[in-house]
Length: 213
Image 1 (cartoon, rainbow, N blue to C red):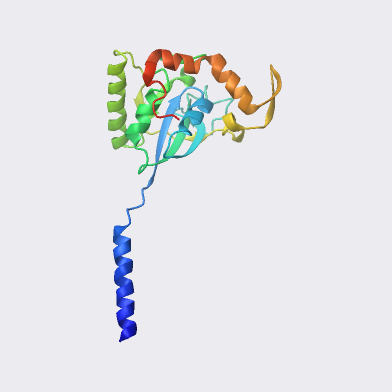
Image 2: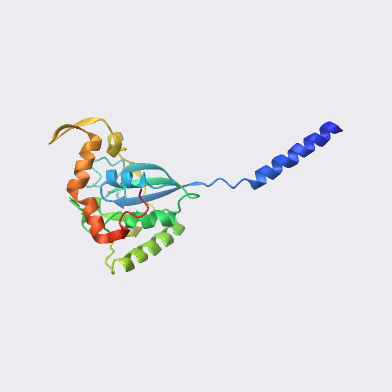
């Protein structure tokens, strides 16, 4: 009898603990095109709540695009962002995205020209599309009606080659016009030389890089 009472009490306590625990948030995914995918990846890795970023290609008509073929196949450079929606919302990621690019430039981003480097939001469902449309409207109002970034429907994501992933952190050495340098140093030189940060600050002022630590 005592054993039954103890088991019943233990079960009751376990049930109370289970009920009190918050539901585990599901991993969500966003796909943004913001010019150079190394830079977008580097920015969103600094956003609390982001779990993983992968550079890749999306939006074109060809299968299995590579760095040599993605542009001719109509793809953009994109980053797939996995995030914990209990820590950062899709709405917040959209706000951060628009303020980390030049959404007024339809011809590319910064020194990188062409549609393959242009900005876009690939909404993966109706809820994401509604949120992206709203975020675009807000950005458009803030910038005086100049935003040209399209909000598009779902597109198949193709991961880029391994050597592109986490490029901004890599100690691997490559041969550049400056000699043999680490990838992370080549990235820093590229980002500064391309004028990305300077242009974003020119466009957005104090709101530039909102949410990026």
